Length: 538
DNA sequence: GGATTGACTTAGGAGGAGCGTA
DNA sequence: TACGCTCCTCCTAAGTCAATCC
Image (cartoon, rainbow, N blue to C red; front, side):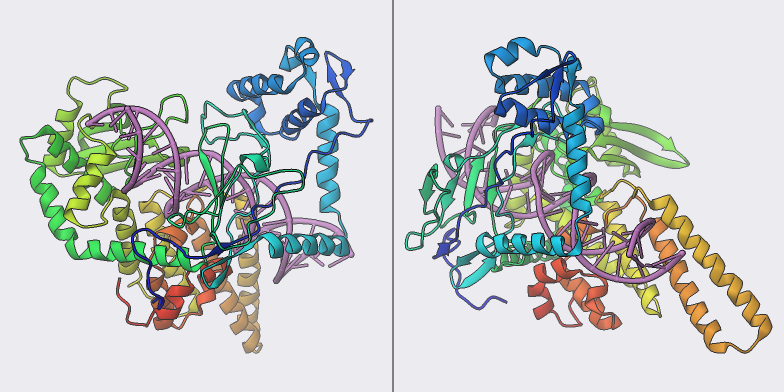
């Protein structure tokens, strides 16, 4: 779909100009009447120590701050920011009283909420000005929106799940920490007054505009383009094209790994079983992770023996594998899956003479798995199976029809839901779930009562009809919402489902696209909206 | 080959805008 | 006009995977 010529060998652009990242405002010292207390006595902290104290104070009503690991990490890092005197005085977090700091924070939040319409508008305009100035770049001939042009503000690190580094201080990033990437002929961004950049480089083989190293994990952070940019759009399109290519050879690949289950080589059999899981269950590849650096989560290749239980029979089914492990973001994967005899036998073998903590696939890692995959098809890696199986599932499930618009949308959401369940995309049930469900039920009840009365009275045909329509809509809505209680549809919509399937479906079903794609999605998938005809097949 | 680093995609939650309703 | 609810946008953590180094 992209007319302009492609650059050769890894070149991503010829011209790149931008204003550099936007830095968050500096720390505002506490007013004199807001005090921190240690052991009951007011203590005036040095500014660096005060800033970090406030990070903690802002979080005290969050569960995080009750956790041992969080408190210890915080206290250790906080003490590093203190002066010698402060460090000698403040020895015990339990003797710290952040009450006034917390109260001030709450008051500020309240005040922000209670701003008048006009004041909110003023803020909005100020924000827009920042976006206008820093939010765009010029890449080749296009003005493009930048995804994250703001430097992440300092704070306390909030890892997910049982993260060993939770509570550590995430330090303030200075221009001196930031590498700028832009093209040679462009106007180089000005660092904030009195500062300089760590480096200005001109690397056209990468797509980032700025980067810095984050201090908690030591990893790189990047400023990159928005998903609606040409660069990202092309990459996204390519991703789905690779997945479509897998469709043409997936049968051969499946036959191959079925065959490999019988191999004399243990490594080959392990690879075959792993591939079977990745294909059938849409598991992630599962890179190995450094112990103690992150929460203990796994994917396919890093499964350990304690993560599966083998059942010769379970609930009347044979050869059942029970999975129970924490995956990405510490989301639990729990599933009972009947597998073929051969897979089952192999798994028994892999588990022999192993104990808790041992790798299930001790002869396999993601590098060798992906090397094998790329030999079967160029561009094929483990994650392509997720994209492929997600998209093909959507396409198959969309064969369920509905005659009214709301029923059509229900069937679309159900297809989307099937994918989300496959990919294990979960969410915490909304806090208001029970209440809003009850409200909906109440409305439906009212509607039903009205219908009862009116059908007796006769007449009022219009009102009856309207009421019936409303009722149907609410019933569908209730079903949809109930089924979706703990399922996140957005992740698969955004990352796994070829948008052309959805665009074609909308055309065929005469459903307006904005019923299934919000503005962000319509922007991101502009390429698909442009090029897709009603007869598109994934 | 094994570890490390760098670049990029994928992920769920927080918070707020905006809408409909009482 | 305030309130409650929903959905969107933003945020940034946490993955994947290839390149590089030794």
